[in-house]
Image 1 (cartoon, rainbow, N blue to C red):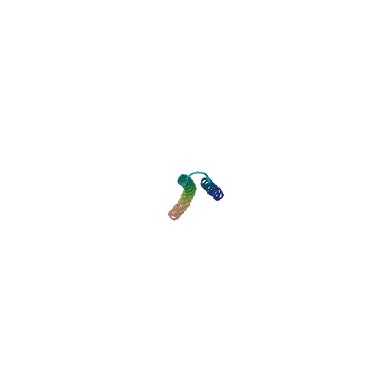
Image 2 (image 1 turned 120 degrees about the horizontal axis):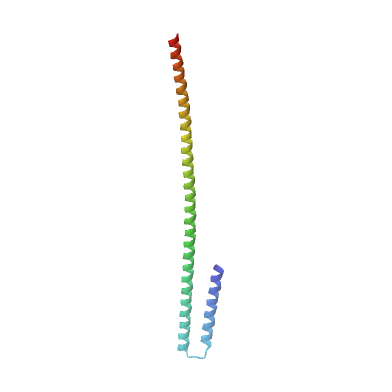
Length: 128
């Protein structure tokens, strides 16, 4: 983009210099020549303003595009992290439930063993 700007600036300067020399060397009255030079310079100034405005708009648009891409990327990363978190929470809940069920099963087995042992002891004492 810098090379393009340099080329445009060089063309504008060259055109201005050529036009100024052409007008100064033309066989017109001095006042008319000065008016023509002033008009031409005003045209060049307007062209430079337009180019600056277009460049500014282009830079602003490019900045907005970069910002939108960054926001989209960040949003995607946030969604991915959220998905991983949700998966981890669900996995942890599943494992906790599984451990609870296994502990309950072992507790029930121990309870049954103690109850059976107590019943056997009770029968043994009654039969003695």
